Length: 495
Image 1: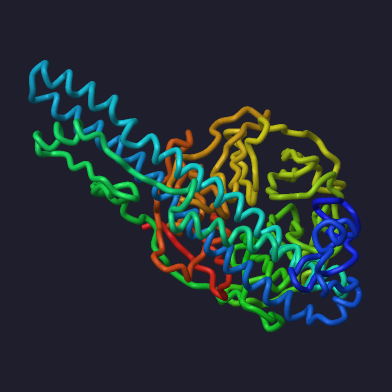
Image 2: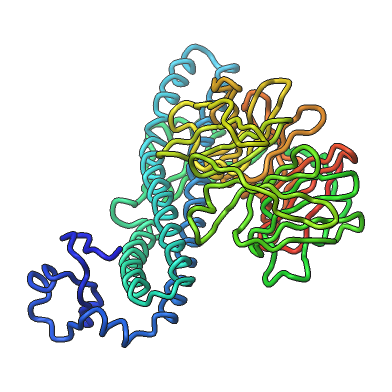
């Protein structure tokens, strides 16, 4: 970040008039008449960089939140447009049952006109959705850089980072305004075919409206009643915690104990029979995924560490009366998700812009097999679950959805069809049913074997429950779901 994006020269000065970092070519070509150009060191010394880093992070977090909200609205608009087209086709076909051949001709005409009604909307909404996706990725990357800079002590790097990210922030604020207000190339206009509207009005059963946003249609789909009920809550907070918990991993360790990973507080904890934390270990990295292995050992994947070397290892801890770190396994790449089936570790690894599944020996970390899914089928794997009998690996991909592949790498299904936008923990019950906790709407969903759909078993109306990890406990037939920014985990059972 210490080089000029335009000229690729080292940044040497700061123009106070324009708020711009400058290399020598920038000064010569663009800022020759500016009076308030300071050497970079002098500008750094005169700035309150800690305050600017904090303020910039707040602005980025707000902007990310707005883009995510807008992205979800655009996804809903796209779904509504698609549903509207299908509803039009369904009703037209219903008319055909009670009219003669003349209506057959009208039916075909209206179905052909359907794409005229929705085609432009779909194109623009997809473009808006793509911009939101790119904005969220870029802004999160900028926010992550701010978090790293905040932990460092180099004021020069911090100054450069803040002002570089400010440019990104300004650019996306303008784009967000265009999307929300429907301006410029992001405008959305729905102009129906007047002949078709008149024909439909004469039949008196379909209402096609002209509107800036896709028209609402009635939701007459039967709701699936929940088939899981909450039976208990678990207090996941430990005395050593300094902030609200984010339990990113959870495993049953015995009939009366759970082991959980707290990313926010960088701890691994043991929950006892009274559903409270009874022991813990403080780590020098943030844990994410966690699995139970043979004996008293567990494996932990690192979510974040200031040391890059720590990010490329799987840590093995022993859990007895105390939790101790016993060893680690080197991984050729960055571990993204882990699972265990005796005596093998299954690890989703990102390496050279590709994501592979490594099957590893739990003792020495040697790679027994490399599973190479089809190119680009995986994007952001968070959790994986193994169905040994079916020789299938189910992957929860954060924004893409649920993917299933065989042990040989063949694709069972690429993306389970559902209406959710964020995917978290995945688990398999003792009947072989695959469940996932997902977001917006937040809940616990069962995934169809062929990926044809997702059935809601539990949903939450409040954003206070933002599910992250999910595990099925065979000994008492319960599901435990954990949440981001919450000191409680929830226990559900079949009803």
